[in-house]
Length: 422
Image 1 (cartoon, rainbow, N blue to C red):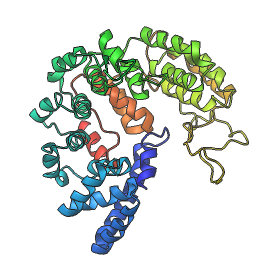
Image 2: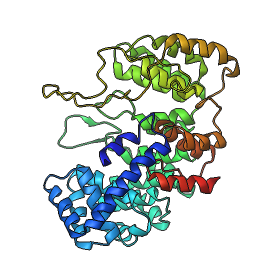
Image 3: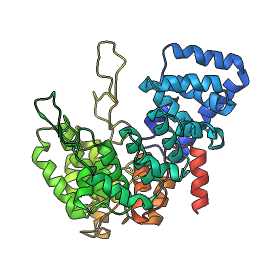
């Protein structure tokens, strides 16, 4: 169930009330483990022979809530060595209450192990708790992993007082250097996770128009052809529409030869929010390879709910949504477009002809409206997770220095935070 939740957190169709149903099921199972007492813990500990994120998550929740120090120490050691265990442990820190983390976060912040300090900072952001001077020190930590996490947390918590330090981090010594044992120059960006994170924070704080900031944010890592998805999205949301249009045109030159580039191009067009791309998106709805992605991009700009407005068609025959259960099929990757509706091109075209007049050329649109605080808060309450992620970013961009809304928090906690904003 923890794995299912990790998928739903980035799914286009999962609204907050749907996420709450799963969260309540998870909470019910965790209550059952608690009722089982030591027998429940023993069953979970047995699963650590082959650790999965879900098993570590469940056990870590029990350890944190029960103040079970020896078990917690074992899990911390495991999480520091296995990525699967680390994911589960971080999920648990986000799941439990801030009261359950008291003492644990303090101990991790004071640890000599860098990854422990990074986890503690991440937990602060998940619970919207500002660690104060500890964060100020962390952005200058000797370890790059800690610095990168610290800048992400500073951005999420709206710590604009660190803006000068973030700018200095971008202007500091370049990672381009000669290794005396190497025959090639180490490329800039190969070890710049902290610089990208500092640029991410500056962008959230409304300072992303500087070319140095933007270039650091969307720098392409060695061996990659595109900037990281989330960084490219934030850059597009924060930049003037002309910059986004130029990015789309740049990708267009490579799009027909590369499926990933064309997918990014389509997403980028939606992030820019330019209604001029609507006819192009509708055109791609006739091609099964692009139909669902084009439909999602159309909805992200116009706010049209294809399913609710009966603008969808039946799935074509022979389409396998995601990994199959055939042993000989080695492709286990999730279908990126799974759960998206199949748009009916003719119906969508008719809808657009009826409603196009209310959309002004040159105006940016997000989910049917120009971006605003009120609209972003409405999207947080009513839309699916992919749109909610963007809404949380817009709230920071429109109100620099505000705390980012954690759309991955337990649903009941999110509902409480949203009620407090009303």
